[in-house]
Length: 284
Length: 291
Image 1 (cartoon, rainbow over the protein chains, first blue to last red):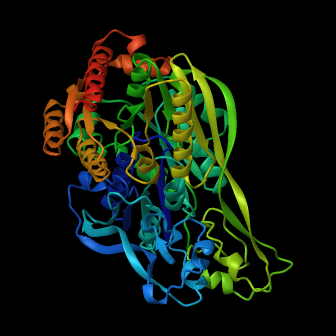
Image 2 (spheres, rainbow over the protein chains, first blue to last red):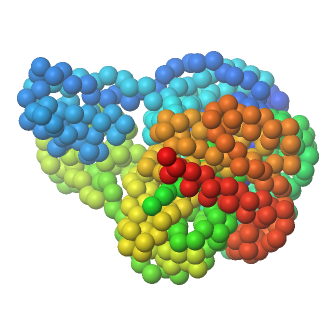
Image 3 (cartoon, each protein chain N blue to C red):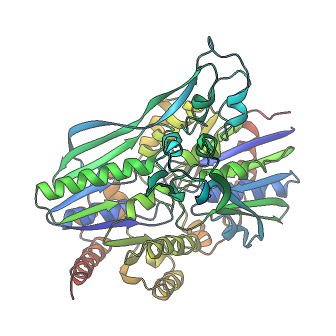
């Protein structure tokens, strides 16, 4: 195997994405595999809690945002017309920029006839990095008050390993940051729980996986709580159930204190590795 | 009219279960599901849908292969790597900025509006319910949240309802910001785990950033009393009042499986705790108006 990227997503939050991601990454590393773990849940990253580290700052992530050179601006409004995100208006004969709406596409500065807009990188988050327990760990983190985590996920994915495994812990939901975390992965694991919420959100996540044309399967966490509807759905849709993790108060207690799944259930390591090896194709 | 948003930072702590119970206890409220990415509140409120509206936001580029001369200008300019070697646009990468369309010398790149999802007006036993469904892999969840909240305000005004109860999304990003801005109060449901603590601190930071008074509860608190205590201490340090704990209760999962509101489904420990919290929260809401 040369390299394989596996993303872990869920639709619903709190189903066990982080638990599975960290356990899988550690289980692979323990077997001598080369592993990079990316915490792409940039709004609420938690992998570091279970690795028991505080990774040091590696780089800032910014969005190139226009800054007005007032003397040059003639208030023509071409920048306002060019901006698809309503991030610029004209007030009192000068352009007025709303930074938090800017996607950093560069259309405004290109459209400005007197070249009155210069781009500056506006920091929206950070990437932290460290080597820990035999793996390379990178964490993306959105600055509080910033709306867009997607640029951080894009930057994080530039650190995908060229050889060996990359495990990506995606955010909950099915929108932009989740897509940025999972698209073009070699395989996707959807973690769910057997409840009506778990099922409803799994359906949305499956819709996303299919739209992105990803190879995917499901891990059912707390598999003995709730009802059987998730299993019926997966059977009807021909979705493989890769692993079931039954509810276990011991797992919950170890988790609460920041312990990993492997500490609570060492036997699951081998199973997770098998799941990862059998799902999707590695790339040269 | 007052607006309360229920948040958590971390997903899966019990926001929707708590919101549905609040909906059953509140009187004269309009209910909103702002978790447009993965909306679940309708599974508990069992509303009757009365209106479905398309939500279109943003646009997407397409390149006409007949007119494209493969000059490469669009590819060089696109900052989202959305145009591949064959000059096909990847709809999942395209942010709809329109730069390619404005700079294409052949007029081959054109922008088309995208259908990003739907929003619904429904009627529940507890009042009007506004919810939405973002399209698969669609963008602009924040704008869709803004739409459902505006519709909820319209309903509240038209029907003289004095409260809007909003089930928020997890995280602290775009849809959460769209859910919290302009609210009178944020109520945070967390759980007694290290992750719960970490995420609570970030979402409380967000509430502070927007100057929204925040209150909190620890759900499933007895799963780890010590951690629950640490979370409450962190709340108090951040100026967040805690309104009691909700104990772990198997009736909670059962009520979700039954599609019911926990406070109506059960008279057990968790249901009682939620009733008590709602009483305190209503009081805090009244205090906001006190001189």
